[in-house]
Amino acid sequence: MAVPTVKWRVVPIAAACLLAAAPVARADLFLDAEVLVEAGGVAIDLPGYSVPSFVDWNDDDIPDLVVGQGSGSTPARVRVYLNTGTANAPAFTDYFYAQSLGDTLEEVGSG
Image 1 (cartoon, rainbow, N blue to C red):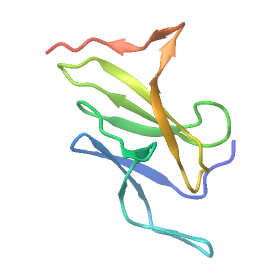
Image 2 (image 1 turned 180 degrees about the vertical axis):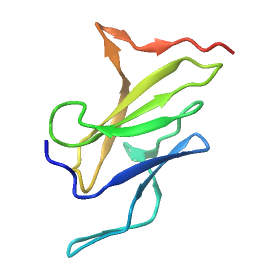
Image 3 (image 1 turned 45 degrees about the vertical axis):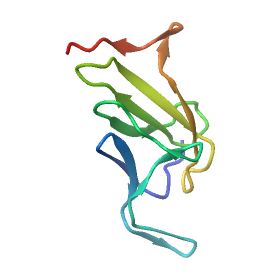
Image 4 (image 1 turned 45 degrees about the horizontal axis):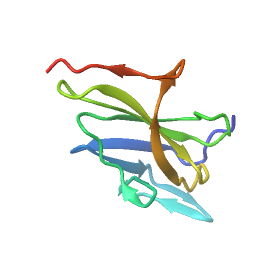
């Protein structure tokens, strides 16, 4: 798998995801400000605490967004947002929950 040129980091703040890139300069690309991550043109908003990361979920050599969600009062699940853009210009679709053997991976909240 090719490593993306841009090193992205996702910052969970107030139940929303921010996408940030360390300042990177190329002849055709410059990124430095944090922006809300969107899926289908809408800012991603998660219940509870979120733990985002990038991984090539569907084996297409493009990093997808994988975000843990949940809190003590809501079930913990893993959302997957497929990247329909590129590594340098990500575009995320609506999410689906990660599954194993046809069942959604879930940890029931305790609060």
